Image 1 (cartoon, helix red, strand yellow):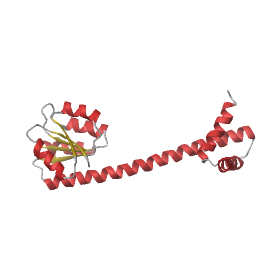
Image 2: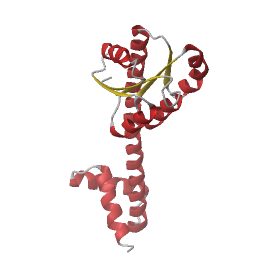
Image 3: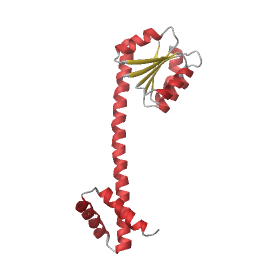
Image 4: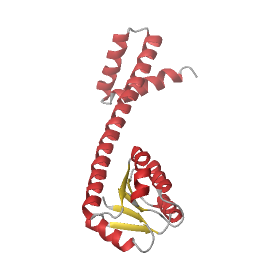
Length: 191
């Protein structure tokens, strides 16, 4: 994870920055409170957000929730043991790691690795989802074009299918493009 935001009071910033650099975060940005962090949320593309609770202007769980909702960044909330136990379950359901203070380098490293693996898996699933949505859209267009061919040229469904494939092959275009040309051609005749 390259781009990280540390949200913490001034006293803990150097130690947390050192921990994150040791975990492989190369570009660190800091915020001293939740308000400043929310402004940076609008400006930056982040891989990781580390919130050291409590913050001067709020505890930090609301901020963690905001980052989890608005970004794909991994979010780690470090909180005192008593509060961490209380807030862990609801925040973990949102994909936010909650670590108890004091944190060790190994615990933070493991949390960051888990976040990186999770983000990678989510990116793969999003890519696959986009491909499936594209295929679904292509199929819808092909069906619409076939319906127009059946309606206008009085073809059977098989004949309309072969007509679309032949058009795509003859013009050396994709089936999607062939379907779009059929749709444009026959729907413009309605106007």
